[in-house]
Image (cartoon, rainbow, N blue to C red; front, side, top):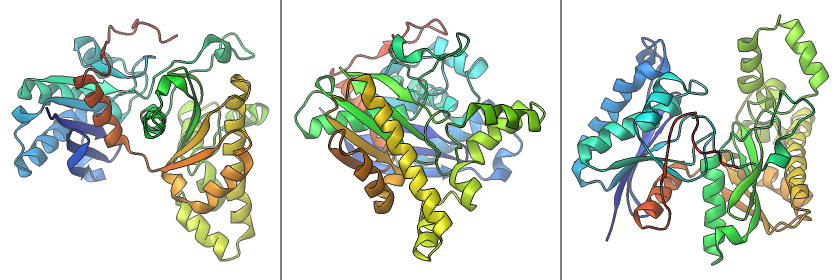
Length: 362
């Protein structure tokens, strides 16, 4: 039996959709949303009908009747901490994402759009590996202040899919392996997979700097920065999340442009780019300590892994931990559809979301 699955991944300026027949993509499209089209909407949630209608129109253009789908999956939004894997979209989840998301983000629309199209199709809607998957063990959550705890929030969809893919390609079970997976993109996060769970994670606010994220910073100097900008949290978040990293140092978020600078003899660009590689390597090594260095492989994934120079620098520094495997690209649509395909085949069981007091992941 074959399964036809619609995957929906809303981003800040686009909504990516794809229809799969089992593992095979029938089509993949990125529906662009220009600034003018989004300008009338005060809140992200107000964009729901526009994006939903564009998805339905695209399906019609491809001659695809939603009633032929076996399932619909949306990108998991900013829910309170959840476990890894699939969740069936339900009223509690819709209410949370509409009225009380952890953070306002376009991905919050994924479950909403999936739910409505699934109702048209007469099938179930799911999310898979939400941004807020948190399976970190209690030991790694403790910080030097009782009021602050480390949390799991990152590129869980691609990191976990890469770990599962690594295991499958070697005829191993995911739960048998201990892997460090680094997602390297506009923001970079790293995770430690052990006995089928992501037991530790380094999020993009405490880890390596990236093309646009500042990453972990000296905390005393960070306090000084907050003082300089008058304690303006919104401005501080903008500096840390979208004005840091390569952009702050070199004026671009494009790694290809940075490499062109290096090839042209720009020593400053070379220093900053190699420092980013070193930051990534140091954070991967930090995760290895949690399992006493007993790691089967380190997997590098994400768009930056297409850079042979960056990947080589990282590999050179961390290959003492374990073999390093490159899986470039974000693979988010494949990951969404592949996760739900495992549910439909009975290889995984979808969980039930019960609100902000959903069953804890640890």
